[in-house]
Length: 360
Image (tube, rainbow, N blue to C red; front, side, top):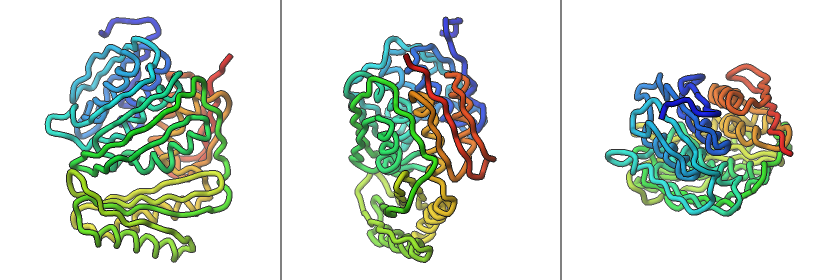
């Protein structure tokens, strides 16, 4: 399936920071546009290049919602082509990252959801998407972040989505489940303006463990509350001890302003004191708070595509311009031809302005 096809898009998966975001954005746009898309050199510069279980699951999920044909959908493949078969069909879908692996996987459910959420959210009808795997793993949006930050933010753009974090799955065992209900917008999202954040409303969080002693989440919660209080931020951090497929620990902090919500995460590991985990998340939250910016770095790169699909100009100010953001901008520019401006230097604060699609 490598013949020249009308309207076929070819995307270099090794561009920019060269991670899985290039693949996911290209897949999402292929489904939305109904255009055959070839992604080559997928994660070519990584230690383990090509498709890992979470990427393979995302590829198959994209094909499932549009009746697409796939070429290259195997573990380790550095080339994938998706040829959509029809418009996105709303409905009930279930994807399990472990099914794409030989011996189970904690691959991120959030990254799979990223791939199919917008196509289903903009379809004409309700959908339910259940994804099993790692709900809380490094280098990916956690189920808690999706629930507390990303979905409420795109809700301001008219995208009605509600997440139910049914069970937690930490790296490396996974075994968690998240279910998202989508109302279906049947039209473009509304533009969003995250230029100013307004006054501080509240700070809260969850310190959670699976299959570990209860004193560990309590120590994370206590230390986070104390650190934030030392900097003038009152907070309430809940300590949770949960069952799961394996041991895991993490803290998930959120800060709400009048006009924005931001989230920050740190994960535990063997030999790292619970207090140090809490301090790492607090440092990120405090750096963002001091910046005065509405959008945290992760939200900024996740909003590029919704903003590009919106019916009008959107803008945001972020506390940090990341390579992830710049890579996502490059892919959206290539495929949609969108006019996107990024003001600022990588590693520092900046502004993102996106001129959305033109709709009749």
